[in-house]
Every structure is written in C-alpha cells, then in structure tokens.
Image (cartoon, rainbow over all chains, first blue to last red):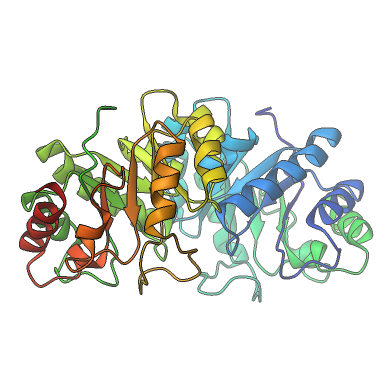
Length: 207
Length: 207
C-alpha cells in the first residue's frame, strides 16, 4: 500500500461538510477522483472517531483509496487504516514509525526546510507543506510562499502535498513546484457538488 | 506487571494540581502510599501528552508503581506505559486488548452491572466504578450508590476501584463493599500536602 498517488489528497472536516454524512462526502470525493482520504476528527470522543473511521474505511477499501488518520495512531491501529498524519504538535514521526512498523504510511506536516528534512530522516513517507494560502479551516498555521515550497520540495526525496487555502482559483499556481499533489479540505468537502469539485481541482493540477 | 495493588489509585489533573509540576505531584502521591498512577490529559496536544507521560514514567518506574494512561492507547504505546484506562466513550476494551496484547493492564469505567460484565468479558483487568459521590472533577457522570457498588462488585471477578468525589470524610463508607481500592483525583493531587493526603486516605481504607 506504500505506492501512493498523492494527486488529490482530501481531508475531511465534519464542521465544513456539505454532505449529510462523512461517508457520503468521502465517497463523492473518491468518485470525483480524490486519491487519498485523511480523516480528521478533532472534536469527537475516541469512540466516535473510531466508529466514524470504521465506516469510512469501508468506503476507502471499496475504492482502494488509502485512508490516513489524523494524529491518532491508536484509531489508525484500531481500524487498520493505511497510515497516520502527524503535525508538529502530535506524536513525533519517529515514535509513530516504531508503533506502526514499516508497512504503514506516515505523513508529517512541515512548514520549514528543517522540519521537512527531519521528518524524512524520522521515517516519514510524505509531507504536507503549508499553509500555502489564507485558510479558514485551521488557525495558527504558519504560511509558506510558492518559492519556499519549491525550496522544501528540493530539500527532500519524499513526495510533498501542498495544503492550506487551496481552491480552484489558485491551484494552478502550485503546478511545477515539485509537489506530488494538492491537499484540500473545504475546496472539496464543503462544496455543493463534492465529486465535481474534486474532479475540477484534479483537472487543474494534472492538465 | 499484571499483579497490581489497587489500594490507592491516583488520577492526575493538571487543572487541580497543588504542585508546580505533574511529576512532583505524582512523586508525592507515591511517597504517600499511592499504588497506581493514572495520567489524564484531556486538554493537551498529543505531543504534550507524550512528553508529560515520558517524564511521569521515569517517576513511576523509579518507584515501581504502575502507570496507566487515560483513553490514549497510542500514548501508552509511545511511552510503554503499564496500561490504559478507557471510559464508555473511548475505544472499546476489546479493541484496546487487540492493540495492546495480553501483558498490558486495561481498565474500564463502568456505572452499570451490564457494563461491568461486558468489560470483564472484553478483557478488562479492573474496573473503575462511580461516580460514588458528587464531584467537581468530571461532569456528566452517572451516580452509583453504595448498595449498587456492592452489586457490581459481586457481579464480576476482576478488581474494582470506586471513583468520584471520594475524600477523607466519606472514604470509610466504601470499606467492606468488595472494592480493591479507592480512586481519587482532587482528594490527593489538589491537597496542599499531596503525600500526607495520600497517606491519610490510604489509612482510612486499609485500617
């Protein structure tokens, strides 16, 4: 499962979803061409997170799209997800690698070259770099310029997805920067037609 | 490490602590006779929880007192804690047992006979039963009478600690109910002299 297509990496957000259920949102994103799903549940109890992850995994498995769990390594283990994404205030990548073993995908958020290099050294499989643009989804994120994104891309060997405020009007500016794909939240899951939004974004990036 | 003395089970709470650091609080509680430490960090990032757990584990290891992590199975794995305590809105005990294997301690919160019986069936090593008395530490807890506590104790084989609003003035009423020990938060960690508070509570229960 380690050979991953990072072209369109979609993160969920219960608060922003246009669909009635998270499963519906995920299925529509996949039908629109999304290649990785990250499940992020910051306000749920562990039980709720686990139950949601179990339901979402049925969808991702059906379509053979990798399911990455945000932060919670235990939830990833509990549902046998494909991997975990950790930020700089989550468990260190090195510790996550020890817990998950070699076969699972580990992604790390990085906003600086040093963080990117360290994450690669610690065993990360990919990086999420941003925030590229102003975003309403996450607060307190550090911003990254297009030039600096290129610098991060050239400083590591592992694939990078750009994240933070990416939408149809600015996605084209991220082409030819060295990234493997776009990571989005509201630009897909908050749109009236999730599948079409995913398809349009993907088209902008791959064409 | 499975042979555990549950006599005085102390849960931490950063917000209630009288000591400057959680390590100091834990060390004083152990010096006063506390036999199990549960680390509960509901408002920390995963990284902070991990860093705190690593520091606390140095203390619990020094005194050979089991360290139980509340809710977060991944933090327990990350620091190789002795076990995990899960409530009814955390990961199911059965799933936790699959992740942790047979050697780690799993505790489950139960307020009903059915929950207690289920938890024992799912592989719990001990139960936390309460809330016994009114408490400021946790909101939305269901209350358990002394008579009902006895009923739960007689319905399972595994050891039970009573929890919830237990302090020096009411601890004696929990003797001869079938419990293995007292679980406390503020009655120890919020007291001006943590070690003495632990020693006094333990004396009330064991004498």
